[in-house]
Image (cartoon, rainbow, N blue to C red; front, side, top):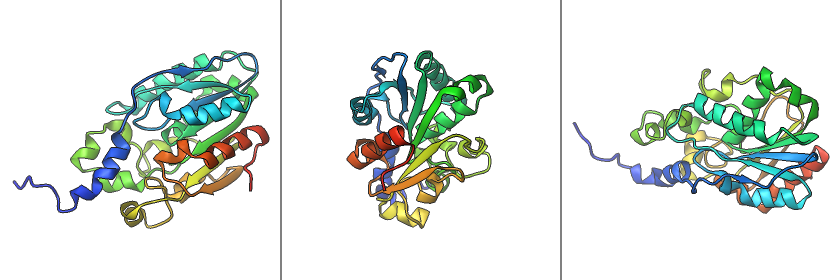
Length: 247
């Protein structure tokens, strides 16, 4: 059997790094009182510390913040959902109004939590929800590479983010609460080839959209760097305060 690397395997290295890079696992919780709390959820293969720039901007705007920290690589999605749900429960015990900000997979985990009937009471004090680069209809990049050894090595949660009908994003019910979507548009040559449309390097702009979104904005930034981007942070804070983006 030929075990030599594929001819263009080296072209995939930036994508592998983007999917598998992981900061040290550190839970961040700035504390919260009976006021407006923003639950902040990072994406795949990251940790709570990856959201520190966004967290600082949100806190500086006067919100209390509670940052979720969870592991996602080589774990089943059900385990990730349970882990995140338990942490959110702790974040929302207090706080008269609760908002959510999720980057990438974090947006899907927000949707999953709010769709759980056990959390129906929270909906009465739910504020704004911001999804940043969230693959609401899955990522065709996952579909394209799902049979490659390196993609399989990332685990079930990663593989569940494709566009198939039974993929995690497509098993969630439609969003029926006030929310805004931020999409990145700075793709790269390989993602442009695979996705064939405007994208952020991993997620097509069309996949970030929901049919019920209350506002939408595009930012010229790649998927991973969205959480460090000044415009993304500013638009997130604006939506949290006003329920719409700044156009």
